Amino acid sequence: MVLVVDDIRLVRAAQAGDTAAFEDLVRRHELPVYRLALRMLNDASDAEDAAQETFLAAWRALASFRAESTLSTWLYRIATNRCLAVLGANELRTGPLSGREMDPRAGPEAAALEGDALDRLKAAIARLTPEQRVPLVLREFEGLAYEEIGEVLDLTPGAVKGRLHRARLELLKDAA
Amino acid sequence: MTLAHDGEPLPCGVYVGLLVDQVAEGLPPVDPEHQATCEFCQAALADLEPLWGQVRELAREDVVVPTRLLATVMQAVRAEQIPGRAAGLSLREVLPQLVSHALLVGERGTLRISDSVIAQILVREALATPGVSALDSGVRSMLRATPGVEVTVDGSRVAVRLRLVVDLGLPIPEVLRAVRLRAAKAVRVMTGLETSAIDITVTDLTDSYH
Image 1: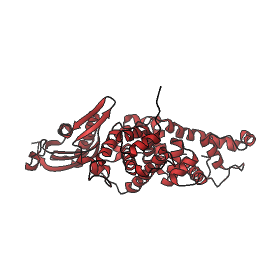
Image 2: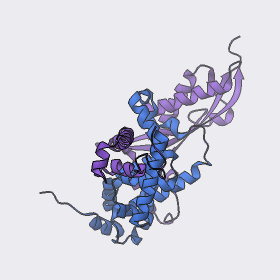
Image 3: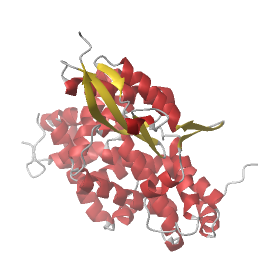
Image 4: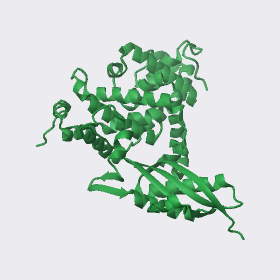
């Protein structure tokens, strides 16, 4: 028999100071949080930082988590805000080695044709305004419903649909 | 490319935006009879399908979470419980106080790599780069275990300072660029760690050709 402990039970334990329970939560949610950051930032090392900061911020704010939304939506919300902050700060960033050079996938295998098409798509996504990029990533790569995206962004489902629509058109125009 | 602006309909009167959402959401056509026979709709769909196919392909792409992410987060979380280190600090501020080695967590246990090991890798790579004749052996550097190299481990990333002596007559920027590329690659391949910065100071030149 497999005993499934739900997120809420783990959250309650973590709120009481149980770091092992929090560790289980991180393990459960690290893939979607990291993937969101990767698609938003298109840089493996920035994404790793943003995911780490998301979970640390979640730990610090855990006492304020109410079960009104799911933990997953709540984490997406924190992660989205982290990514938007990184995108804002990136314009000021300089360094001897840019994140792109450090991307382990930027090796010879990335030169294959297949990789090129997807790399161009990633770059096109990175050119969308953050306002359009967030709903696109949450919908197409995280598979969230309009209502859930609305919770992450404090928008009505209708407004989400509108932004998503514009994001798709923009992306297709750019990729075409 | 026949993809028109959302505000412009195709010659048949159908808005492209409608077709975009149909393709992206996998919805049935709003007007199946028209679409089945309309050459403009068919042409637009033939353009849209492969483009959107790439988005779906990207959605299927395997994303692998760096294994050290969990360990780094939990290290910081546990550090928060140390009195006086409660709130308002970023990961970057919290971690260096606790770590003097890099930490990698695998399925069968943790791997710690001390910064002196990373320093040795860097020395080897720097000296193997054409144009680098020595690492700085000045008095200050001599006080360190590995002269000319300073390694700062920030959780899972490594920042490096190198002090080099370079051969006279070679373009210094190119030499340094080669050092950086070699060093970052060697650290990555040998330890699995990423280099966040490699700062290099050229402290002297040698005339090794004569």
